[in-house]
Length: 238
Ligand code: ADP
Ligand code: MG
Image (cartoon, rainbow, N blue to C red; front, side):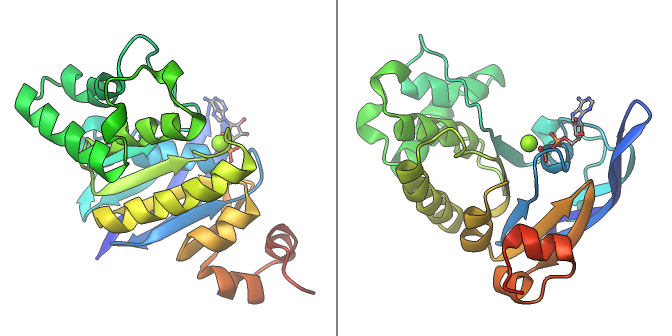
């Protein structure tokens, strides 16, 4: 059974349709990367899976359950954003715990989950620090900690590494993959970076202009691009 399933999903802003009927199925445990040029609809698609945007038509199922119209907090997903604003006046521990505190999660349950997240992310010694005392990579890890403490089955990443320098991006790609494996999660990872597209996922979804142009294993897409757009975007040999 698919863990994430989109059926003929469409999205219009006012009268302009920007997502034109997307079908997508991601099996449990897979790491799917959605790639495409800026403005092609990647963030909008991800936000609809998260429930941060309504779909105009079509349906979304997560873990077999139809979640179309269900609130984000009841979807069993967590999202890691590109611009992960941490609260400067709160410690790392409280930054990670913040969403749980808002929901009124019991204190000892919060402590257990924050410790587990810190463990997984190697943030153990940094829990009492403030964000300004952290490096860029450590801050990005705190942002991931916020997603992990929710203990979701599905992780959604919207270009989480695009604000980091090239060297750190390489490290964090591996870190994200390790996390995904360790948590037994299903992930949908959005990027406009061809390197991330080719190396991170076991499923590659190529988008263009609000359509999905091709879905397949990265190597298969590279070797057998379905259109000239895919070939030129992925850099397939002629
Ligand atoms: P990507 O993440 O691939 O760069 P987006 O999903 O952000 O693309 O945007 C897809 C299209 O939808 C773009 O044309 C963008 O201008 C439009 N769009 C996104 N969000 C809104 C919004 N809230 N209101 C109006 N148009 C939007
Ligand atoms: Mg985007």
